[in-house]
Each structure stands twice: as structure tokens, then as C-alpha cells.
Image (cartoon, rainbow, N blue to C red; front, side, top):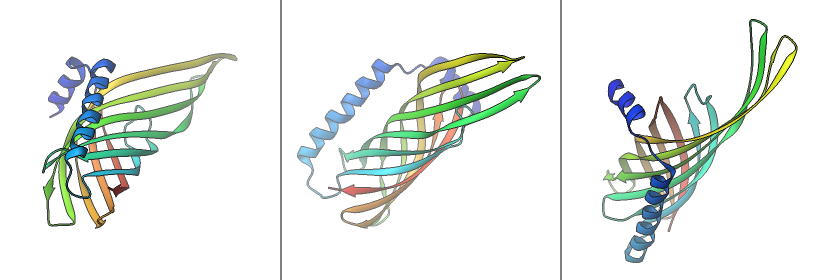
Length: 198
């Protein structure tokens, strides 16, 4: 598994153009399927909290919103945005000290294959793409000389994971979802939220 992750991270690149094309297809399919939806709960919009367990970027608590729509009996598309609370880290080593502020956001599009366990519970595997924007700002000081640091990077990643939905009512669903985010490195993101179905 580690070899596959390393291969994907080094040899397969997700460009912003490809991601925007996929996002447009997701939104178009969502609007097209909405016109043909016959049941309540085919679409949903909600909020979530997420915890990023990666070392780089630092672990952070994030908050976000998501939209999902069923385009077939067992298939669903989801678009989500998560903003992680900025985190400041101070380090000192061999006369060099730094105070850096890290920021992170995640824009993702995933496909779910729904496995229904009765009327109120769905479990699903997921696969998709993420774009992560990372920022670093602050200063590094060595022997009394301070150097400002400011960097922003946006990169593409693959998502693999699973999730579970609990329908509390026809209009309200709670959700939990772990996913592995795979790029040059791989890290786990765990999220939970609530969705309003319409």
C-alpha cells in the first residue's frame, strides 16, 4: 500500500485546470440530477468539523461546508470546502529561532457509492480529488538577524476513504467520515457534520 501511495504522489499530478473541469462536471451533474430527483433527501447542504492528522501541514481543526447530490440510486457526488484554523509554531535550534504561522484550506470533490442499511443508515466508500492551499508566514532569527518568511503553495491530492450517514429525520442527517489524502505524503482527515436534506 505504501508503494502505491508513493507512486501516486510522485507520478500522478492533479492540475488546477483538471480539478476545475471535474468540479464543473460535478456541479452540472448535480443540477441535471436535481431536475430528475423524485425523493426528498436526494440533495443536501451542511456544515462539518474536520481534524487533519498530517505532520506537514501541522494538525489543525477545520470548519467547512458541503453540498451533495444523488445522481443515481446508489451514487452520490459531494463538493466540500474546509478552512483550518491558523496555527503558530515556535522553534529554536542551535542559535536559530523561528515563529511561523501556518494556514490551510481544502477544496474537494468526491464520489460516494451508497450501501443502504435500512431506511436510516448509509455507509459508503469514497474517492475523489482535493486541492490544498498551504501558507507559511513569520520570521526566522539567527544570531540577531531576522529574516521574514512568506510562502503559499497549492497542490492536488487524491482522496480515498469511507463514511456513514444517520438520518435523524427526512430533513436532517448526521455524518462521520475518515479519508486518506494522498499526495507526496499521505495523511488522514477525520470529519463529522450535519446536513439538511431537500
